[in-house]
Length: 145
Image (spheres, helix red, strand yellow):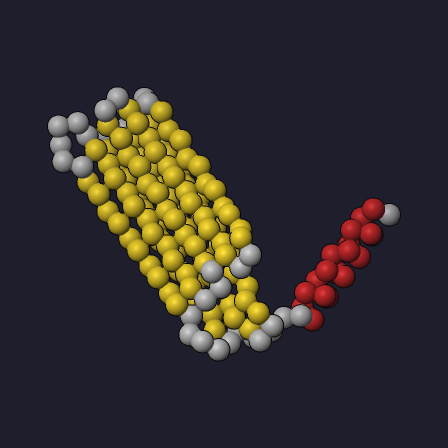
């Protein structure tokens, strides 16, 4: 009986969702990501976002994630997503450290309904050497309806 009720609930939700679907008058997607490695450490992060404008309003989606690894030290990664009205923000930080050698990557992604932005910064460092840095940035502004 539970399986039957669950199937009915899924069919009702699917039917209601498809009846409300509209074509996007304006849409966009973005994404950035990056990796850093030094010695026995590595760190990566990525972020993506999408937005769709319709006559009924705006809808947006966002995703972010990362990972870090160290063969003898410490590694951590964390992701945080905030929603505030039609604004979405996500941030991922990943870092690995082994003595003085480290790798880190940070991605910040946001959407506010009519614009999308994502930035990834990476850095790796071995003591006694110059740090290696990289920045990737992407911005999209959706046209007016």
